[in-house]
Image (cartoon, rainbow, N blue to C red; front, side):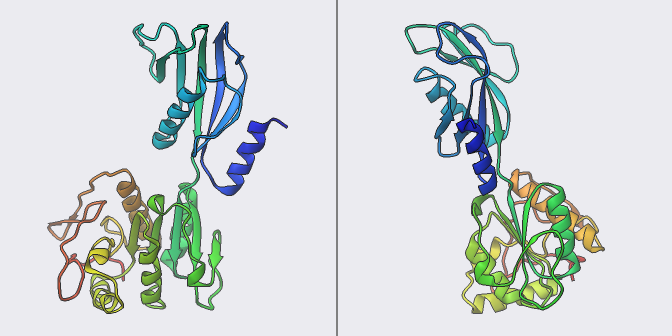
Length: 291
């Protein structure tokens, strides 16, 4: 079995990102030939062969960019790097080896699934599991109740077991509906995810703000929480609420500002920066459907 193939399977099993590099064109003299492949890990380790010192540094650099933006690209390494390039998706770089030659290498990023961690055992939690899986998240549920487990996701029964492999890319939603809200929020804040939302009515969320401050959650950390979670789309059913939350997570991830009208006011943006009431520790959002 080729080393690149074995490495790709191992990385997929561990949920880690990588780039598959394939030589699609070679002009002699080059050590790499069309069809040669290599896997480039997120830590810039090359498994396989796509050329030696003339190609590998460039491939590592472009592989990192491919993982960052998720876009495939063709890298052309050529002595004529100053020629005009009119091919979309082609990156042209100079050949640094004195022997000359030319290579074209196709880079295909395989990004690990982003994590969605859901606290709770509720209709909204179940809807988040189903929708999260459908849009490509790796979904895990934390449920300390004795209710029948939610279907479709990995279920953890201890708050201490809740972990995130890549917190800066992860989303966490607390959909406990009063069952173990405070403990779930405390654990979720400690995980430092990119997005943290709490499913609650404005009144309940306001009450939770004061409670969590007494438990040591700072005003700054509370201000980062999206609550009531989601973009206001007039959602009523658990499935509609899940759609609004996934939309908020997506907009936050892509740094897209989302504005909706809620009772004549502009709703929160995707990357919330709310004004926090010093007494309650909560943002003064208008009424919503997240009871």
